[in-house]
Length: 92
Image 1 (cartoon, rainbow, N blue to C red):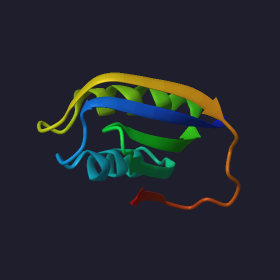
Image 2 (image 1 turned 120 degrees about the vertical axis):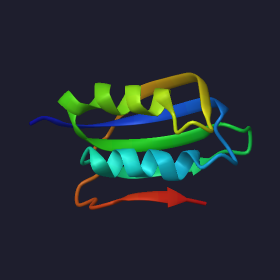
Image 3 (image 1 turned 60 degrees about the vertical axis):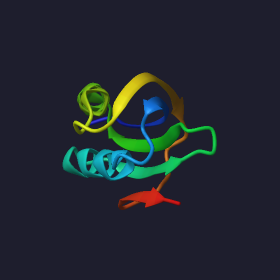
């Protein structure tokens, strides 16, 4: 297993619809650590770290949404791994 970390940004109907908690649940289910946070511009950002082979599934599940949100655009970039991180949190 190769561990990698991605920084993601999501735009669309992603605030006020349970999106952060949804992302947290999916990430935890797939074994990722990291965090997710609302931004003042209406987007949501996250950093997720885990098995490189599972990132495609994470991205597609987030794109599908929770029935209340609508991801219209998302971007991902590699970033530096965080050693010792153990959970996936919703940040304020």
